Length: 404
Image (cartoon, rainbow, N blue to C red; front, side, top):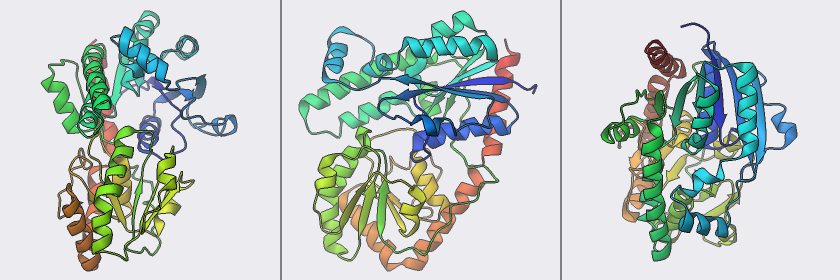
C-alpha cells in the first residue's frame, strides 16, 4: 500500500487519556502513524471538554500536523427545546456544526491534500457535503457505538416519564440520522462485531471492517501495585448511561452488597461528577470526583464494577482493567463487544442479588479470582493487538481505494 495522507476529524481533543473515547481516538491516530501513514489531526476544543493551550501544544507532535478549533457546544435548555420543536435533526448534530471548524477543514484540505478523511463521530457527518465539494478523499467513519441504541436503551432505564419520552424521541431522530449518513461514506469502521451486525441488518451497502480498540504490542501493560480486594468504578459522568447506572448501583445494589460484605469498600470517580454524588454519605462508599491519574487510582484496588444498564460500542475501561489483571464484575451490556466468557474472564451480574453473589465469590475465592483476572489479561494480549487490527483496516482501505 502506497504511503497515504489521512486527515482525522474529532469532535473533541482526544486528551488527556483518561476516558474510553479519548483512548479509542488516540489508538487510531497512533495506529495509522505507526503503519506509516502521514496523519493530520483536526479537533474541536469544545466548551464541554476544554484542553488548555499549554497542553494542546504538547500533544501529537509525532504526527504530520495537529490543530484545534475552539467550539462552544454547551447544552442549554432552550437549545434542546428549540431543537425538539423545530428541527428533525438530533440536537447532537446541530451542536457540532460550526463555521470556524468548517473553515479550518478547508484550509487543511488545501495544503495537506489528504487521500483519506476519517471522521471520529457520526455527529460530524454534517460536514460531508462540504468536504466532498472540496476533496476527492475517501471518507471513513469510525463508529464508537451505534448512537441510537445508546439512547434507546437509556430511555428504558429512566423513571421520569417526560425524560423517557424525550429520550425515545431523541433515539428515533438519531436512528434516522445515522441510517441516512452511513450511506454517504466509503468505508465504515464499527468498533465491535455487534455494531457491524446492526449496520448489515439496516441494509447499508457501504463496506465495513471491525476496528476494535487495541493495545500496541510495544506498550507495557499497566503496572499493578499490591492490590486490596476493594472495588472501584471509573467513568465520565456527563454521559447519561454512566451516571444513571451508578445512581442505580448506589441506591439499589450497594445496600445489599454492604450488608453481605461490610468490609468491602467501593471507590468511584470520573469527569463531570454530579454534585449529588459528591454530597452522598454512604457507608463503605467514597466518591473521589475527577481523577487526575487513572492508573494511580486503580493501582491498589482489585475489582472493577461496571453496572451499565444502557450503552453501546465497547467499554475500554474494562479492557484496561483486564490488561491490568483486575477482576471485572459487570452487566452483560457492559461487556458487549469484548469476546470474554462469563465465569472464565469476568463475573456477569445484572440484578442486585447477582452483584452480591459475584462480589462474595471474588472475596471468598481469591486464588480463583486471580486466575480469572490472569485469563482476562491473556485474552486482551492475544485478541486485541493493534498491529493486527490496523493491518485489517488498511486492507479494507486499499480495497475501497482500488474499487474507485
